[in-house]
Image (cartoon, rainbow, N blue to C red; front, side, top):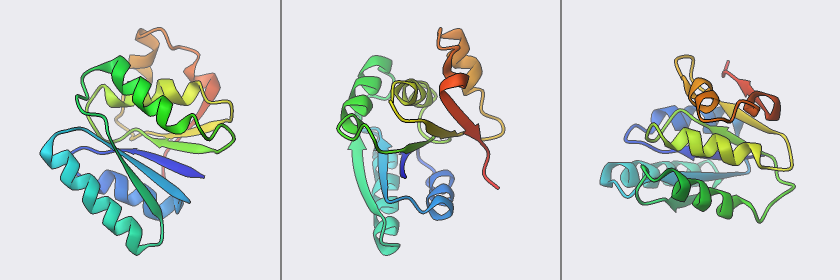
Length: 142
């Protein structure tokens, strides 16, 4: 299983799922913002210490919904049979929407991690992606 993490300025919401799930590979999606990039590089170093492959994906402007969707979809489309878990707790407010949209286009079932206070499913319903709950399993960490 691989893990997509949306990186904001705070790395802890992404570090804990990485340590808990122990994925084979982590894709650290961050913006061009200096603090986001710095947090992503720190997480990449921590992953290396734990022998977890981690790759950075700089999506630039995180407020361009379609661009964000296209970049992430293109990045993981080369591995259609790989199971991906999507951590929606970090990044900007628009990043989880595009990421969840990518997850429902995957041919293999995916898991989406959200925080207890996350309103992402409501946002997706309003955006016309109401079938999302059927396509992915939502879970909360232990």
